[in-house]
Image (cartoon, rainbow, N blue to C red; front, side):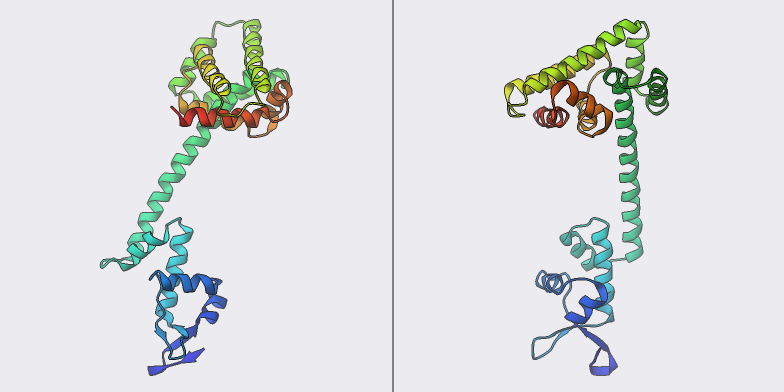
Length: 252
């Protein structure tokens, strides 16, 4: 520790780095962009930091952990009315909103995955387990228009018709497997994504871009869903399906 005028404690860059875990290079960068200037620079060119600078550095680290960009942090810290508690409360609110949206998306994806299980994993699951998944899907997703539409369309189907639909779904992935030598953005592959979306809309529920995107995640997400797709289309078909659909959705 270096003592300077008035008994004020000062630390060198190396000491600050050791104490905080922030690299010397990062501290130099923060100085260069004006985010965290040293309290003083000696005649020999050594950067020195007091307790106030350390406190500011800690808040920079907190805001970085919260996902803020450096320019945003600079604007916050330099604001004339800067209030640490107010900023943190605002960030907590934003994170809570993001968590809520993420939880909704997780429930949405689970619901779509469970709906798909009935038609894509029918060979690999005990019927009791399929019914269990369908019941869970109803709990998670039963109040949505998509699930209501799904139930309406399937209520009068026979077991044989359900099995036939499942076979048609898998035939679509067998078709995609033959397209794997093509690029995912090829006309043939993109036509397949359009065909898949239309098939789900006709037989299950209105397959919106959001629903199709969730399904794509499940196709490449591993587990029995991916295994069954790869079984009929060849290894890597599930991942290829996601690549194709991602491009398809980006062009809508």
